[in-house]
Amino acid sequence: MVDVKWHLKKYVFFIVLMVMVVITGNIVLGKRGSGKNTEEVWEPPVIMESMEEVKEEEPIEYFVEEFGEPAEAFPLETSEPVSILTAEEEQNLQDEAMSAAKLCMEFYREVEIAYPGTEYSHIEFFSDQQRKDVVKQLGEQGLVSVTDDMNMENYQKMEDFYSAYISGMDAMVTVFNVQMEGNIGALTFVHRNGKIQSYYVTVG
Image (cartoon, rainbow, N blue to C red):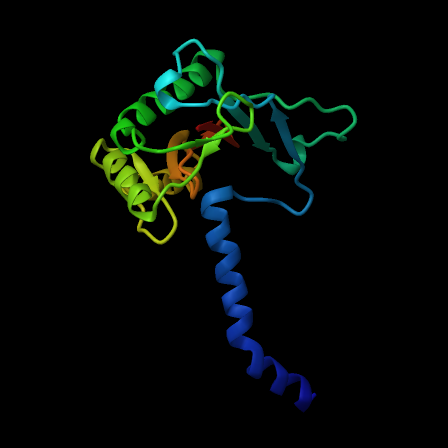
């Protein structure tokens, strides 16, 4: 019995740290029950060669992810993922991502494209400063934006979303993530009627 108590005291810091990690994860991903199923809808990706050549009517890459409650879960072989967003809301989120990208066009004008004209096209080099400038630009427009090694802009909106979520209220928030290669990802969290989903759009 003495040995057991000694080990608990020795590792209590690590136990508390693990609990904090789980709680922090719930802020972004929502609550996950032990019997919870995750359902995903994957649409075929469309790689865009240049932001300047993108047209409003062109499809862009997006994903829908749903986290259902245990009582609502069904066997995977019979379940069909259903978006809690309307088709109009999904289109609005895609349009919002495109509009946000166009706000930052000035930071992409001098970039070089690797493998132009192919579906594997991507930016050859995008500097840390360019990433941070894009995040700042998005933040100045009131958008939640973030990138590696930089504090989140307008993080209060994420806090408001989490407060609404734990209170059982409907809420929605979009986080714009400027990736290392320069792509802009728009991850939207939606809580509605007791369900939480994420909807992802990326513009490259």
